[in-house]
Image: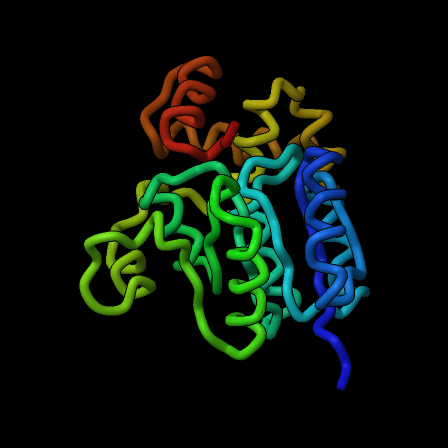
Amino acid sequence: MKRPRVILADDHTLVLDALKNLIEREFDVVGCFADGCTLVDAAPRLNPNVIVLDIGMPTMNGLNAGQRLKQAIPMVRLVYLTMNNDPDIASEAFRLGASGFVLKNSAATELLQAIREVVRGGYYVTPLMTEGMVGSFVQNFKRRKSKCNLTLRQKEVLQLLAEGRSMKEVAFVLNVSPRTVAFHKYTMMEHLNIKSSAQLIEYAMKSSVVFA
């Protein structure tokens, strides 16, 4: 029987190495990536069954990357492994197609348990996030309203701008024209009733479009 194929994505090399050592005894690790854009570009060619990814990653955060990955590989199962225990973030993850949500301060065996569960077609959320919930924890999370009503492309542009990149640099990373980036930037500002670039970046930080 073939072992499930797993991709790992985290911007900390030590974490990636530790994760690989942990799970390759039971699963085939077919790729490791340190940023969202590289992950999204390379993952479809690697034919993964499961992708374990952090939320806070450079160039494209894990939520945006996960949304892109579910469009490109609809059958892939996404397991988020993160320090972020905000229920609103977990809710957004499940709305965008996640199958698992594990905190980095959980026991290492929880990640293995989560991967096993999602491979079987189920869902997994660390018990640290589900205390007091009644019924299906996934449905509990999905019922929460999204705080961010920007499009996926707008969120990608906003993250890169918040990282301090110029519009030309954003255009290069996203493989679009600088004029397209400018269009998205000023459309967001108009939509959010924001008057300056500084206010736009402040919005990005407060609304968790950008994750530490």
